Image 1 (tube, rainbow, N blue to C red):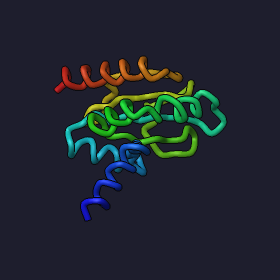
Image 2 (image 1 turned 135 degrees about the horizontal axis):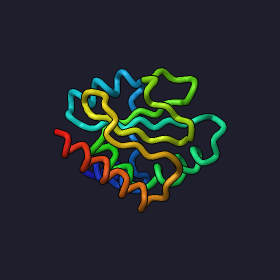
Image 3 (image 1 turned 60 degrees about the vertical axis):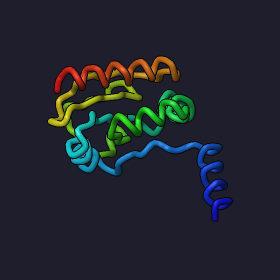
Image 4 (image 1 turned 90 degrees about the vertical axis):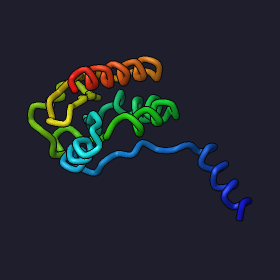
Amino acid sequence: MKKVVLLVLLMTSLFGTDIVWQDTFAAASAKAKKESKPLLVLITSEQCRWCRKLEQTTLQDQDVISKLNSKFVMVHVTRDKSIYPKNLTAKMVPMNYFLDANGKVIYSMPGYWPVEDYQSILDDAINRYNKGK
């Protein structure tokens, strides 16, 4: 039994974890309020190459994934296809909106960002969220 547990732990550490996305904006908003965490709304479009780059590089980094999963509640929506508040406009994609428990935008950042810069954006969002508490 110990060997099985060790094997599972080893496989998890080798393959990493994934971002825990909520299915809908409404579900994410409710969870963020319940857990007292900021809500990250990532808006992308189907034809956006910078969106794919963000998804395939920055959002695959294990440190980014760890910070997102521990500090935020996340929902990934598609511009013009998903249901989310109209005040979260996305003239450019990808677009990151960080909201407080009441749905107020506390920080936003458009575009693709490499890992180090994205980590800094996440830290800024956390700091702004904590200042607003």
